[in-house]
Amino acid sequence: MLKQTLIHPEINQILGRAGHHSKVLIADGNYPAYDTLGPNAELVSLNLSPGIVSCTDVLKALLTAIPIEAANTMGIPANDPYAGKGDPPIWNEYRTILDDSGVRVELQPIEKWDFYEAVASKNHVLTIQTAEQALWANLLLTIGVRQPGE
Image (cartoon, rainbow, N blue to C red; front, side, top):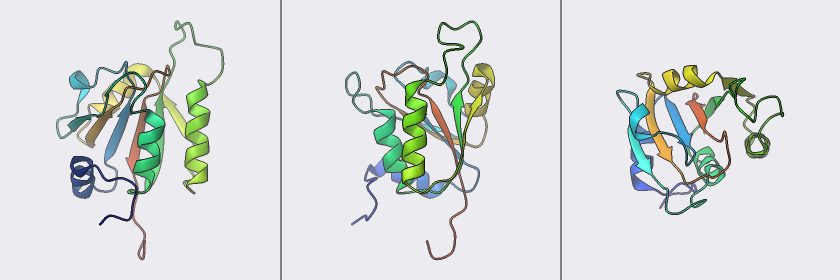
């Protein structure tokens, strides 16, 4: 029996093979997940219906299973209608979830096209496609080092 809240067998298998610096994308419902996989990445689709499963649900479960050393959001291009209006609300939800779980990393936006390139890298091991409806909810996590005794 697993003690963590992440119980999805395929996701656990992929994370078990991953290591330090591996990247995991939590993709929102608008992200072109199939077309942007890195050469070593696998896609797990959890998009049952709009909003189910959400990016925040996935983040909470992942944080019980892996250490995080970096968290990147997709930067909002200057020509996007959302640009200049502050951070999307879901980014604050991510900050709260990370903080509540004891993960001390800052969300770092990556320019949209650089974000796609980061996902397409050889370090990308997993995309978890959600049905998240919030805009700009894509979150790229970098797996950190597990400390002795953890």
